[in-house]
Image (cartoon, rainbow, N blue to C red; front, side, top):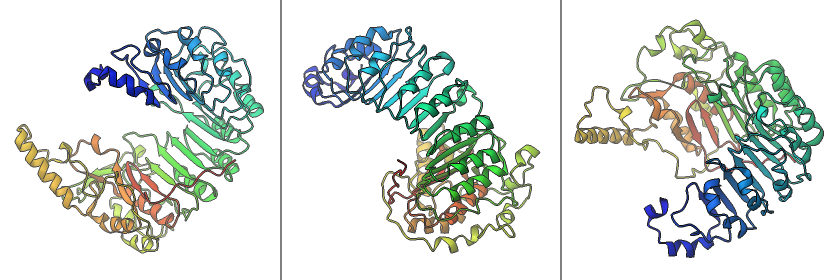
Length: 506
């Protein structure tokens, strides 16, 4: 009972609600009809609550964004008349809806010719679409199964200006690509959803290639693939002139994944985002393969905003209180599978020397490269700065007895004080001091460590392998004027003083 919890008097709510522009209601208000909003632009509501507040649709004909969640066996026909009274929607999201009639949504969409974005989530029973063309619809997001919506393909015959399609690329109707090719000539963004909870298989190579080649000018691609094969690379190469965003997740590790990643970046002059990740498992190699030319083709890029490289090696390794690496961890035996794409050498420092591999400077020489960059203003106050991460139990000694709350507070205070005095961000080794100083002078800051709260060991540091990849990225992309975010594993570095470049594709 949110209103009673907040102790908002009914008179105040009724008087002030007329000014509301955005309303989100998941549960009924304690007073029916207490909302008197007449200037809404966005309404996010569940159907049981909507049934008690139907007047919100009737008195807000200017409503432009509607998110409607079907719950408690409320049928579409129960709200259909009120929904069809709306005529100015530009964004529509329907979730958990089961339809009984093949064309139940036709009239609703016909009444909103200015619709620009359509999202259907967990919807079932779409047997067909009829009606006028949706001349302004540019984005369709489908988080549903095609087998439950056999007539959904007909929607795309009504979308001549569709630019973006995001969907589960599983059991896709055979005629879908042909319909898109014939009726959606402006399509330039393909997103293939990947839900690990559903154990969906990655796109097979042939299907991936066909989706990449489908648009006349592909700008954005997001998909889960088995490997970065040569055929996939060649298909992307054919779209290199128009590509602006490439986000790929690979289920298997391969040297080709890194090799083609670096080449794609160098061959796409408009690229703004490059995100390459590997499926996370416990067998990631701890060390880099010394024979692998990691991203040695990286160079200054005019439009790149963000790069994310995740899963080529384990992101972190055990450390000590003084933020030094724990001895002997790299010398552990690795099985054959875990070593694929990794190294069996015992001394990882030797691996990173890069001698004879065309890799440029080692970690120790990296300062010679970074000194050339131009300084950028350090903006933003929301990032986690060095020495200011919130202390948690994971930072404490495993031998500490924290059963007593006072002792726990004392130890936690000591750890926090230690973090404040640290010259490098937590999760970084002392060897990173010069690196942190250099990137800080250029406007960069360490923002966060995604895995920090999930670790069991009291002290974990970014691994040597992840640092090596990170340093190569900073080295190769040095001077890129729009680069504002670099993610390696779970470690994120940002430059908030830079303004992202705007998409240029028509």
